[in-house]
Length: 189
Length: 117
Image (tube, rainbow over all chains, first blue to last red):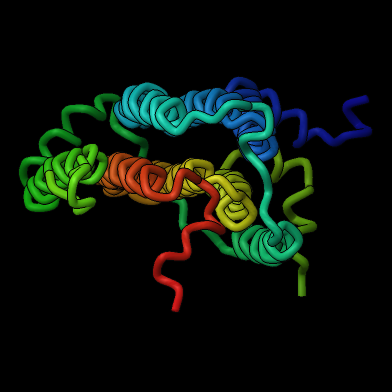
């Protein structure tokens, strides 16, 4: 049996069994739930599969030694973004949720674009000779990220803070109900 | 010329996880998101699919951070910025969709033709 599939294959498999298993399991979960997000007929079900996809991606970040990123992924995406999207769907509710997620007339054109883009990306990824560094990721990732954030990347950090504030105020202003004056018909707030 | 895809389905390459595996996974996820953006009629769904595409980019950034510059954390910090910008984008996007829904009573993207000549 070992001769049939080759000694080095067995060695490569046994040497890092858990990381290989984790990668392929998480990849399967992410791709399957991503497909379900697009293909589900009910948009609320789509958002639920989106949460599954985000949590699978947090697991993938753990296999990449990015534990802070995994925590942020769960907090921001699986927590905040999914809830916000569900709330928006409930505000824009319609009588029947059953067919709330239809395709438009460009399905075949979109499938054609994807069928062109995907093989090119896979071909280029397979063709590239990656310059893999021999160094290991440090055990503690949160400490160095905090130091870098407030030293080398302090200006982008502050700009992102301002951006989030502006986006928050802008979202409130845009989504605010505009009262219409009944007498004149003109809009006044 | 050696065909690289043959190298991909070789069992030894398949079992030693490297950056190429993560890049291909992120390409697949990006294409799922791209398909949704192009082919969906509901505006909220298009936003969701944009989130999928941004997440695919984050996988790439984290993978490069681990395999290319492990001690610098450049990719991880970029991924954090991408997450922050994506959160701002989804908040504003949903606000705009709600505002348009008030005017048009529709979230069908084909009805959003206010700027058409």
